[in-house]
Amino acid sequence: MNLLQRRGVADGALVLACLALTALAVKASWSALPAPVVALAGVAGSAAQWWRRTLPWLAAVTGAAAYALSGNPAPLLVGVYSGAVHGSRRGAAVAGVAGWAGIAGWSWIDEGRLQADDLAFSAVGAVLLTGLGLYVAALRELRASWQERAERADTERVLRDEQARAAERTRIAREMHDVLAHKVSLIALHAGALEVTTDTARFQQGAGLIRVTAREALQELRTVLGILETSPAAATDDDGFADLPALVLAATRAGQRIELRELAGTLPPGTARVVYRVAQEGLTNARKHAPGTPVTVTVERRGDGAVCVTVGNPAGAGAALDLPGSGAGLVGLAERVRLAGGTLHSGPVDGGWRLAAVVPWTEATQR
Image (cartoon, rainbow, N blue to C red; front, side, top):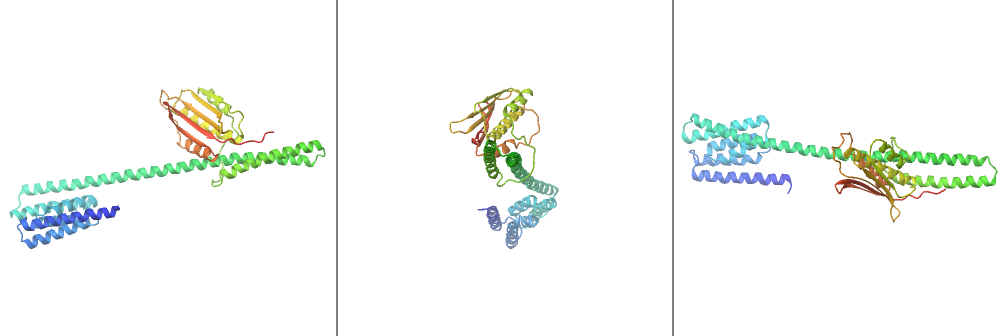
């Protein structure tokens, strides 16, 4: 059952309840007016509550008139409340005045006179009923505002994540483009040298170098095609072939305590780039969120040949540094690791924090 159906059932139940009380009003003579007048007023006021959401002013005025003529309070209560909840601010004022007039009118018809205390009682009742409706309306508006903010925040988060992934793809594109340009330029250089030489040994050596370089270029091209299948093309700054010990040294000189455990040996360029990015992100996060704590960077090769890089640090004793950030660093890193065929995990461990990635070993041609 959807929202419209539930509202229809609720409105129908209210109309039936008002009609049932109208029958009691006719039978028990809740009003001094003749029974046909009581019945007609009660039925009209009850039926008008079916449109209390779309025509709240009509429900309020008709319900108030029904109470004055029949003594049935249900249409007045529902109508004035609905006028305050579903109507505009001006409509809420109309509903309040109608409620006051309906209560006072019933007192006048029932007693044949209208005194000051009757007017005061009618005003208090109308104000309380209208105030309750306005309070519920304000709560609904506040809830709708919160929901809109939550949806907007979720949409912005998704957009930031997509932008981070796109930026990481673009960065990889720039990096791989530079690699291929370098490799192809070497091929052209050595091929030109072969054209002007006649020495057999040097010819063989040059041909071997061309073969090795061409294989490396094809390997890099295969990686580019896999990574850039759906990524946009743009230019961003990049670090190229970064050196992990140099990264650790720079962070150490800046005051960060780091222990580097390189147990995997020399890494292929593609794998080394991903490992570097993981270590860079882990050191940055540790520097921001746990300043002054020691950090351990471990790079090792597993039994299946994949490279596991882990960056861990204990919980920081002081407050995190107030540094600006988009919060998308891990999102972009996860995209890079995923595109490389690996996995990335991060989270609290033993009171501290650990960032771990498993990166496939991309074989490089050995010279």
